Image (tube, rainbow, N blue to C red; front, side):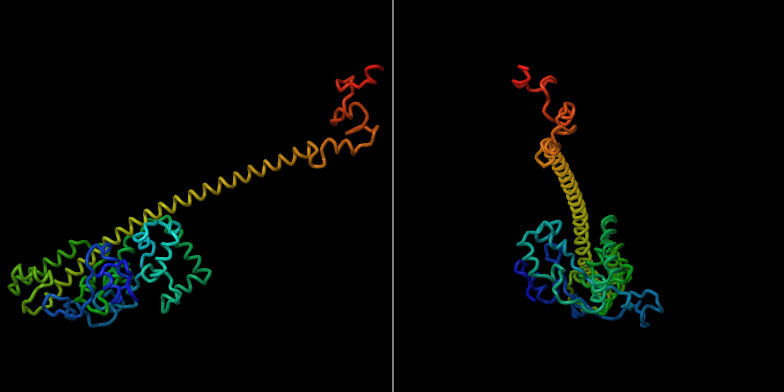
Length: 364
C-alpha cells in the first residue's frame, strides 16, 4: 500500500507504516504522534503498566465501568473515514453530484482513504452488520429511517469527535468514555481513560498537567525547567517514576485530542453546509418536477383542444362537410335541403335568408 503522491513526506511516512486513515497534516491541525512502546524515563512515550486505579479483576467489576481494564465487548474500536468530508477537502464538492469524472477517478484510486468499498467483503461483526443492512428488508428499512432522521436532526458532533478519536487510536466505550485499550493506561491513547470525550477541553489536560507537575516538584524536587523538558519530551534525567511518562503522555494526548476536536468541528461545519446544499437541491428538483408536470399538462390540453378544433373544422373526418355528406338530399338536419336544417347545421343558406344569390333567384 503506497501513499498518494500528493501527500507531503511526513504524511507519506505515516501512510506507508499502515496508518492509511490518518488525514493529511494540513487537516489534522498538528503533528501525528505514532504509538510507541519505548522511551523509559527519557521523555518518550512509556507503556509502564503501573496505575494506582488499576483493577486486576476482569471486565469492569461485575458489569460496572472500568476504564482501566475495560470490557472490550463494550468498547468501540471502529473508525469510519468521513468519505464526504475527505472528498470535500480534496475536490471542493458538497455533494456527490458535484464530482467531476476526473474527481471520481482520482478518488477511486484510493478507496481505503476515502472509505469506499474495495469490492472485498467485510469480515467479522462489521461484515455481518453490513450484509444485514444491505440484504434484509428490515435492514434496508433501518437504513432509510436513519437517512430520514439525519435529514431532520442536528449534526451529531459528539459522534463525529468520538469517531475521530478512534482514528487516532483512542478507544471509547458505548457511551463515549475513553478506555485504556490493549496498549495500556500509560500511553497517549489510554492516559485519559475514564473521561467523557465530549466534555473534555484543553483545560482538562492542563489541570492534570498542573497536578502532576506539582507532585514532581514536592516529592521529587524537580525544577520547573526539568518539568518543562518532560512535557516537551526532552527530559534526560534519571528520576524513576511513572509520573514522568504520565506527564509526557498527557501532553501528547492533548495535542492529538485538540487535533481531533478541530477536525470534528470542521466536519460538523461541512455537514451543516452539505445538508443545506442537499435541501436546496431537493427543492430545485421539486420545482423542476412541478414545472415539467405543468408543461406536460399544458401541452396535453393544447393537443386535446387542437384535435377538437380539427374535427370541428372537418380535418378529422367529422366536420361540417362530413356531416353534410352523411345526410341524403331532401332530409332535414345536417346537409339536408330544408332551409332550417341547412342553416342550423352549417349548410348553404338561401338567398332570401341572406345567403349567396344565384341568377335563377334573381330573375325568377
